[in-house]
Image 1 (cartoon, rainbow, N blue to C red):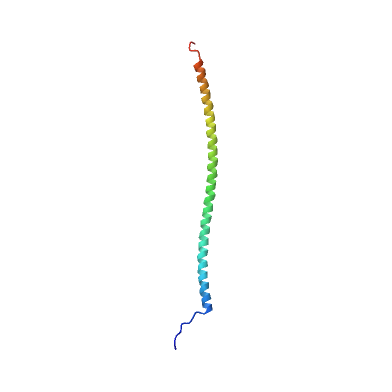
Image 2 (image 1 turned 90 degrees about the horizontal axis):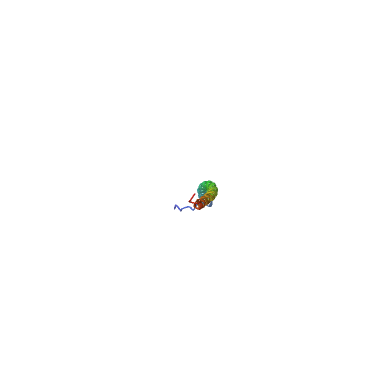
Length: 95
């Protein structure tokens, strides 16, 4: 008797294909879970950065207002000093 290699049956081929699909599905499931974790972390960090950006904008606007107010009061004080100097230079030196 001669041994002839037996071709895998259709059922064997289907089972092999199903095993391969199951392995791929497990790999894909793990990759999707990792991707989901990464997306969750990125979205969380993005939300934090958005909050920081809003705080920086608010702080910038407040500093800008403070600067303009300081500039206004400084200019007013300089104008008053200028007026005082004008008055002092007009004083009659003989008195």
